[in-house]
Amino acid sequence: QVQLVESGGGLVQAGGSLRLSCAASGHTFGAYAMGWFRQAPGKEREFVATISANGGTTTYADSAKGRFTIAKENAKNTVYLQMNSLKPEDTAVYYCAAHNTGSYFLARSKTYGRSAYEYWGQGTQVTVSS
Figure 1 (cartoon, rainbow, N blue to C red):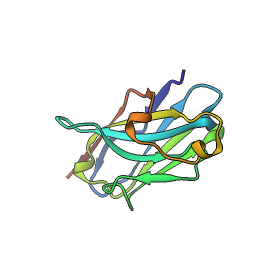
Figure 2 (spheres, one colour; figure 1 turned 90 degrees about the horizontal axis):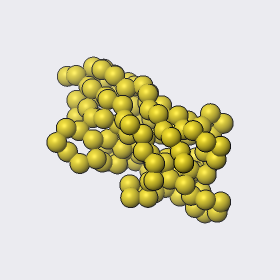
Figure 3 (cartoon, rainbow, N blue to C red; figure 1 turned 45 degrees about the vertical axis):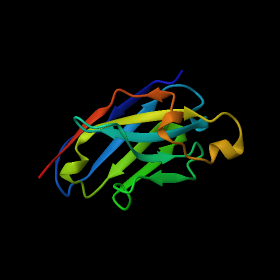
């Protein structure tokens, strides 16, 4: 069982930056692929960025490419989402998610879609004002 706690959300003006953090409990963080997803009011939860368990592979939504960076620090059981050049349309609750990839090297080198993630945090609100 993994527990995820997000932090770092808040109110920022358009063009500003925020760094979200997600701290995970447990002793096998290195086996977990991690993802960030977001949900705006009245919309479906959508993929933002994912990172492989070993941190070597990342995938971004088109809306995040060039502006957001996902990073994983296994020694601190933490995954980050650095968000730059924020836009009002980035306003949403941001969720961290974890997927246990097991012990196989290839599985730890891959990123995964939303349906693969077993564990989810409670979310952190990001509001970007125009």
